[in-house]
Image (cartoon, rainbow, N blue to C red):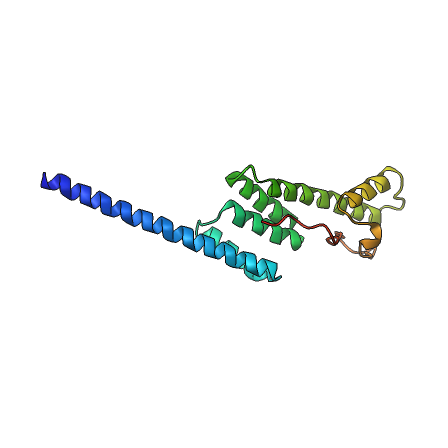
Length: 170
Protein backbone atom coordinates (compact mmCIF):
# COMPACT_ATOMS: atom_id res chain seq x y z
CA UNK A 1 0.00 0.00 0.00
CA UNK A 2 2.82 2.41 0.93
CA UNK A 3 4.56 1.55 -2.34
CA UNK A 4 1.40 2.38 -4.33
CA UNK A 5 1.04 5.73 -2.60
CA UNK A 6 4.73 6.50 -3.13
CA UNK A 7 4.46 5.64 -6.84
CA UNK A 8 1.31 7.76 -7.17
CA UNK A 9 2.99 10.75 -5.49
CA UNK A 10 6.08 10.31 -7.65
CA UNK A 11 4.01 10.15 -10.85
CA UNK A 12 1.99 13.19 -9.79
CA UNK A 13 5.22 15.08 -9.08
CA UNK A 14 6.69 14.17 -12.48
CA UNK A 15 3.48 15.14 -14.24
CA UNK A 16 3.47 18.50 -12.46
CA UNK A 17 7.08 19.16 -13.48
CA UNK A 18 6.25 18.23 -17.07
CA UNK A 19 3.32 20.64 -17.14
CA UNK A 20 5.36 23.50 -15.71
CA UNK A 21 8.09 22.87 -18.29
CA UNK A 22 5.45 22.95 -21.05
CA UNK A 23 4.01 26.21 -19.70
CA UNK A 24 7.51 27.67 -19.45
CA UNK A 25 8.37 26.53 -23.00
CA UNK A 26 5.15 28.04 -24.32
CA UNK A 27 5.92 31.33 -22.56
CA UNK A 28 9.48 31.38 -23.98
CA UNK A 29 8.13 30.51 -27.43
CA UNK A 30 5.52 33.29 -27.37
CA UNK A 31 7.93 35.92 -26.07
CA UNK A 32 10.62 34.91 -28.54
CA UNK A 33 8.25 35.06 -31.48
CA UNK A 34 6.96 38.45 -30.36
CA UNK A 35 10.52 39.76 -30.06
CA UNK A 36 11.39 38.44 -33.54
CA UNK A 37 8.24 40.01 -35.01
CA UNK A 38 9.17 43.37 -33.49
CA UNK A 39 12.68 43.17 -34.94
CA UNK A 40 11.20 42.19 -38.31
CA UNK A 41 8.78 45.12 -38.28
CA UNK A 42 11.61 47.51 -37.36
CA UNK A 43 13.70 46.22 -40.26
CA UNK A 44 16.29 44.38 -38.15
CA UNK A 45 16.13 41.21 -40.20
CA UNK A 46 19.44 39.85 -38.93
CA UNK A 47 18.39 39.96 -35.25
CA UNK A 48 15.00 38.49 -36.07
CA UNK A 49 16.59 35.71 -38.12
CA UNK A 50 19.14 34.85 -35.45
CA UNK A 51 16.48 34.78 -32.77
CA UNK A 52 14.22 32.52 -34.82
CA UNK A 53 17.09 30.18 -35.62
CA UNK A 54 17.85 29.93 -31.89
CA UNK A 55 14.18 29.19 -31.21
CA UNK A 56 14.15 26.44 -33.86
CA UNK A 57 17.42 24.91 -32.58
CA UNK A 58 15.81 24.66 -29.15
CA UNK A 59 12.89 22.78 -30.71
CA UNK A 60 10.47 25.58 -29.86
CA UNK A 61 9.53 26.55 -33.41
CA UNK A 62 5.93 26.99 -34.48
CA UNK A 63 4.20 27.41 -37.80
CA UNK A 64 4.28 31.18 -37.23
CA UNK A 65 8.01 31.26 -36.44
CA UNK A 66 8.79 29.25 -39.57
CA UNK A 67 6.53 31.52 -41.66
CA UNK A 68 8.28 34.61 -40.30
CA UNK A 69 11.67 33.09 -41.08
CA UNK A 70 10.39 32.42 -44.61
CA UNK A 71 9.41 36.09 -44.93
CA UNK A 72 12.85 37.18 -43.73
CA UNK A 73 14.59 34.93 -46.25
CA UNK A 74 12.23 36.15 -48.99
CA UNK A 75 13.15 39.77 -48.28
CA UNK A 76 16.83 38.82 -48.38
CA UNK A 77 16.39 37.11 -51.78
CA UNK A 78 17.33 33.76 -50.21
CA UNK A 79 14.61 31.96 -52.11
CA UNK A 80 15.56 28.33 -51.45
CA UNK A 81 15.80 28.99 -47.72
CA UNK A 82 12.50 30.88 -47.87
CA UNK A 83 10.76 28.00 -49.61
CA UNK A 84 12.14 25.53 -47.07
CA UNK A 85 10.90 27.65 -44.16
CA UNK A 86 7.43 28.03 -45.72
CA UNK A 87 7.23 24.28 -46.29
CA UNK A 88 8.21 23.68 -42.66
CA UNK A 89 5.46 26.08 -41.58
CA UNK A 90 2.93 24.25 -43.73
CA UNK A 91 3.95 20.92 -42.19
CA UNK A 92 2.85 22.35 -38.85
CA UNK A 93 -0.24 24.13 -40.16
CA UNK A 94 -1.30 23.25 -43.69
CA UNK A 95 -4.34 25.52 -43.56
CA UNK A 96 -2.47 28.83 -43.24
CA UNK A 97 -3.59 30.79 -46.29
CA UNK A 98 -0.94 33.47 -45.82
CA UNK A 99 1.86 30.93 -46.04
CA UNK A 100 0.34 29.39 -49.17
CA UNK A 101 0.07 32.92 -50.64
CA UNK A 102 3.71 33.66 -49.77
CA UNK A 103 4.87 30.38 -51.26
CA UNK A 104 3.00 31.15 -54.48
CA UNK A 105 4.43 34.68 -54.52
CA UNK A 106 7.90 33.23 -54.01
CA UNK A 107 7.46 30.96 -57.02
CA UNK A 108 6.19 33.87 -59.11
CA UNK A 109 9.26 35.86 -58.12
CA UNK A 110 11.59 33.02 -59.04
CA UNK A 111 9.92 32.62 -62.44
CA UNK A 112 10.13 36.37 -63.00
CA UNK A 113 13.82 36.35 -62.10
CA UNK A 114 14.47 33.60 -64.65
CA UNK A 115 12.74 35.64 -67.36
CA UNK A 116 14.65 38.77 -66.32
CA UNK A 117 17.91 36.82 -66.62
CA UNK A 118 16.82 35.53 -70.04
CA UNK A 119 16.02 39.08 -71.10
CA UNK A 120 19.59 40.11 -70.28
CA UNK A 121 21.24 37.07 -71.88
CA UNK A 122 19.24 36.62 -75.08
CA UNK A 123 19.91 38.72 -78.15
CA UNK A 124 16.20 38.93 -78.90
CA UNK A 125 13.57 38.84 -76.23
CA UNK A 126 10.17 39.53 -77.64
CA UNK A 127 6.90 37.87 -78.36
CA UNK A 128 5.69 35.26 -75.90
CA UNK A 129 8.55 35.67 -73.42
CA UNK A 130 8.04 39.44 -73.23
CA UNK A 131 4.27 39.01 -72.78
CA UNK A 132 4.80 36.39 -70.09
CA UNK A 133 7.27 38.60 -68.24
CA UNK A 134 4.92 41.57 -68.42
CA UNK A 135 2.02 39.46 -67.15
CA UNK A 136 4.10 38.19 -64.25
CA UNK A 137 5.20 41.71 -63.38
CA UNK A 138 1.61 42.92 -63.64
CA UNK A 139 0.52 40.10 -61.35
CA UNK A 140 3.14 41.29 -58.85
CA UNK A 141 2.04 44.91 -59.32
CA UNK A 142 5.31 45.95 -60.90
CA UNK A 143 6.40 47.28 -64.25
CA UNK A 144 9.68 46.95 -66.10
CA UNK A 145 10.25 50.63 -65.35
CA UNK A 146 10.24 49.72 -61.63
CA UNK A 147 12.93 47.09 -62.11
CA UNK A 148 16.51 48.21 -61.66
CA UNK A 149 18.73 48.30 -64.70
CA UNK A 150 20.91 45.22 -64.73
CA UNK A 151 24.31 45.32 -66.38
CA UNK A 152 24.58 42.72 -69.13
CA UNK A 153 27.55 41.09 -67.39
CA UNK A 154 25.79 40.69 -64.03
CA UNK A 155 25.46 37.02 -63.05
CA UNK A 156 22.07 35.84 -61.81
CA UNK A 157 20.41 39.21 -62.13
CA UNK A 158 17.43 39.49 -59.83
CA UNK A 159 14.38 41.68 -59.86
CA UNK A 160 14.23 43.79 -56.75
CA UNK A 161 11.07 43.51 -54.67
CA UNK A 162 8.50 45.79 -56.29
CA UNK A 163 6.72 48.30 -54.13
CA UNK A 164 3.22 47.24 -53.21
CA UNK A 165 4.08 43.54 -53.24
CA UNK A 166 5.18 41.96 -50.04
CA UNK A 167 4.67 38.68 -48.37
CA UNK A 168 1.67 38.54 -46.13
CA UNK A 169 2.26 39.33 -42.50
CA UNK A 170 1.66 36.93 -39.67
